[in-house]
Length: 311
Image (cartoon, rainbow, N blue to C red; front, side, top):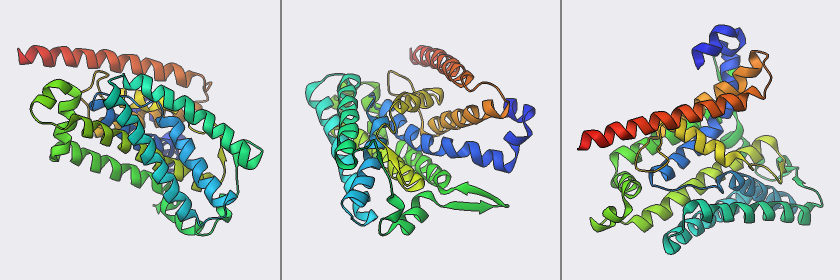
């Protein structure tokens, strides 16, 4: 993908161009890594996208409408995100219903809350003035600053993306919890029979996805200094697509954090590469759909070969 766009666009391969397409890839990549962990564990979270908006709006409302220090607002939004993640995981494990249905319900509830509460507090669908909150400068440095490398400024979110990917890879490959994730996603019943705490693992994974949504939501709130009530809606499918393009199986039990990050990288390159070539931006969705289909077909072949090798 890089070679395709780089050959045809000098801007795309320039340091400035690289910084531009790494920016959307970074925030997507943070979410894609968390969603990949959840998918490896055998579940989906359709509320992940709108949750970025919920956490961002929480920061704005608490900091602006209630006049609190922005770090208090960030802490409140983290507590809310963890509570939502716990609720999703607990409901999935207790009811046995598909996570697709449970989180679809959460998605709709959060969408309504985002719109309703924003209008209630601001009489509009936007919360602004976040940069006037006490403590904003420190929050901006942590979540939205820029790093100058060879004269080109890169968003600090790119560094956070790399750290999230490294941490998730270490957890999956080097810890007991990582083994539990693969076991739960591969065969939950068999995992329970050998002593894997499948329910606790599932709840932790949902809370991990919620934490990533919180981080991205805070990043957006601090970076933009205003938040729309519809922020994040529709992004949940993009997160899943990035994870699938990166090699995660829709059936669970297989995937990697690095693969999900590569999927996000492909997304970022495609999203900005198409405008750099002066193509109609609508072609982006065609490429995205084509990449998804190719990834699903490739995953299916890999699964078949893996199953055949076990026999």
